[in-house]
Image (cartoon, rainbow, N blue to C red):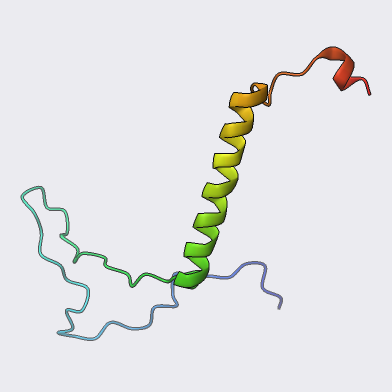
Amino acid sequence: MTMDKIDTQGLSGPTTKGCKDNIFPKDENGEPIYPPFNPTPLPLIEPNLREELKALINEVLNERELRKKMKGPYDVYRLDELQE
């Protein structure tokens, strides 16, 4: 007999009498009050690299702003420039 689907409803195992692991206090509406979720932050890059990238990005943005003031915005092109 082949299985066409996986039944996940029965995977939690039998209940244990007297166990109250998943019992949370209830608010005035009867909704459970869950404990706060405070995950530990996972830094994706090292602090030194973060500072270096931040300085580099700010430098590029400053150059772009200066160039924009000198020549005009980047999004404006003449038609003959686009045909080259």
